[in-house]
Image (cartoon, rainbow, N blue to C red; front, side, top):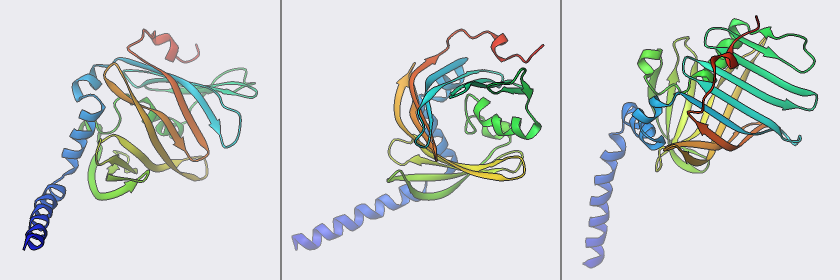
Amino acid sequence: MPRARSVFVLAFLLLGVVPTVAAQTADEIVARTLAARGGLARLKAVETTRMTGTIAFGTGQPGLFRVTMKRGGKSREELETPTGMLVRWSDGTRGWIQAPGDTAPRQLSAQELQNMAGSTDMDGPFVDAAAKGNRIELVGRDTALGRPSWKLKVTGRDSSVRYAWFDAGTYLQLKWEGTIHGTGRDFDVTSLFSDYQPEHGIEFARVIDSGPQQLRFSLVEVDVPVPDSVFEGPR
């Protein structure tokens, strides 16, 4: 009899769990992910961020990597290569790139600027999603980095489709998957996020692996003074 009662209690508990899992919606998951990172108000209050670390491609030697962002879609990426620094930046409307050996920056094409758009949005696609033209849908339960997760589908204003996975326990992002449209061909990109650490009450992933590209951030700065001139194009 005690064994039968245990089975009955277990079945009852499972019945109580199932509706909770099924009741999750995309909006609820987004709300929990934003809360997990530090809260919507705190995220939207940030004016600038600067992340410094290293970048490595495959088995190559890591080089310096720094990305600076400011409200208004302003972004600047500095990447150390064996032949010098590669810099890509945007003032929020236009963008430029200067590779080692170039005598002057080259303006980014419309497609290149669109590909860069994800890295110029300080808040990401889930903050004010509707206002940005992003449609968020719940795909369902899945696994990422070996952990139970929720998988969301993000359809952008330009009809681009990407997917994001969030840890079902911590609600921090584990994975991002999408397509980058290059010149003459498309590239499928998958990024894995780990080693979250707080800075100014906001969780930042210190490790980002994107196939052959590995990012390791050792320093994260929030609301450091950054003049607009850092993002301006050539005169």
